[in-house]
Structures are given as structure tokens and as C-alpha cells.
Length: 272
Image (cartoon, rainbow, N blue to C red; front, top):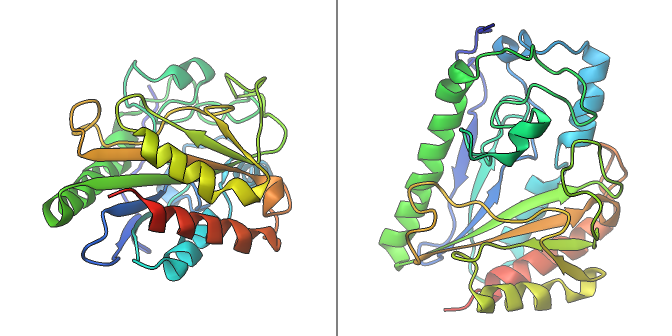
């Protein structure tokens, strides 16, 4: 299997934990906002530069890092933020790294081999191991450590996963034929308590309406806590891109400020 050179390249850190208030249990997780692909990883991608730029336009959750930053500044008690500095085309930190991941069927497990339009991104027999070891596992450990710090400091952790999604379904979506509300709230039966979901529905009520688990379901919890630790709560916030930006990959619009305010309201409404 091809194993492109993938050692982490010098330069900006691949991810960052941005501190919030010591007493805040909230961790805003922003995994898909970046476009950076290190040179060693770029060598294993078969797209030319123009096609890669277009793929980044489609798959990057553009400006979600800014939404989280503005929400953090507006919140009464500043949340913590964990922000990925690399594109999801390097590794997708929110996928299962094994056969549990349903997106393997679309060639988009933790290491993508297909594009959003089901075309080749990497050689089909690419060995995902080097990328998993170089990027996925350090990221997973760092998020787990951030959650552990919130548990130690406050006795609980509340992960709010900040994403966006295109107005029209892309070919890779396995469940793209369902509703596409302005704000989709993704839940987990173990980690999303009713009070947190209710707070989110209220906070985003003025943003055009919310839906539940469509077109994307679930939420991110580090595997060390997943399905086992009720002190860790989690909710995914998926924002439809036409509500705050020009698609695909364009500038933010005035809707961004409204959504940042709604996210700040959710942070402040997190149930005790």
C-alpha cells in the first residue's frame, strides 16, 4: 500500500487549546474550519492544485472558527476552545479510526481516499496508518486531555461541536435526502441530556429554525469517555452555510454575527 511521507511539518501547530474561564465546563470544538495541508501530506493527494482548492471549498467548515471565537468573546463566562489547525483532508479527527466508521463506505473514514464528489483523493490502497499515527492520535489525546482538565476543574465537561454544512447535499453524504434546516442539532443518546438540547433549541430559535440529527447526526466525544462517562455532555451544532457565508468557500456575511450571538447564548445557558 502507498505510504506517503507524513511526518508533521514545521510551522503552525496542528491544533490549539484556547483557554476560557477556569470555572467553565464548556469546550467549543472546531474540527473542520482550516484549509492547511502540510507538504508531506499533499504529496499523497492525487488532485491538482485547482481541484484541491475546489475540494477544500466544499469540505471546509469555513468561518466556524470565527463563529466560535466571537461567541467566546460575547459569552458571560468564556468557554474553552479546541481548534484544529489542519484541514480534514489530512485526517478527520471526528471519524472512528476503524471499521466502526460508516463513512468508510464512501471512502471517507479517518483518512479520506475519495472526494466529496466520490472521485479519487488518494490511491484507493493508501495505508492510513502513518497519517493516523502522525495526526489523528495526537489530536485525540489532546482533546481527551482538555476534557479531563474540565472534569478536574468543574466536575463535568460540555463539548459543543461547531460545524457547518452546504445548502445542497454533496454526493458523498450518506443521509443527504433528509431535512436541511438552518441549524441542525446533532445528538447522542448517552451524552446529550434533554436540558442541553432544549437550551440549544432556544438559543438558535431566532436563526431561522432548528432540526434534529438531519442531515448529520451524532456528536463528538473522545473515545476514552464515549458511552461510559455521564459527566461528559455533548451536542453538535451544524450551521447551514447560506445563513452566514457565500458558498462554496466564500466570504462571511452579516449572518455570522447573529449565529455567534446564538452560540454565546447557548454557552451561557448550559445547564448546571
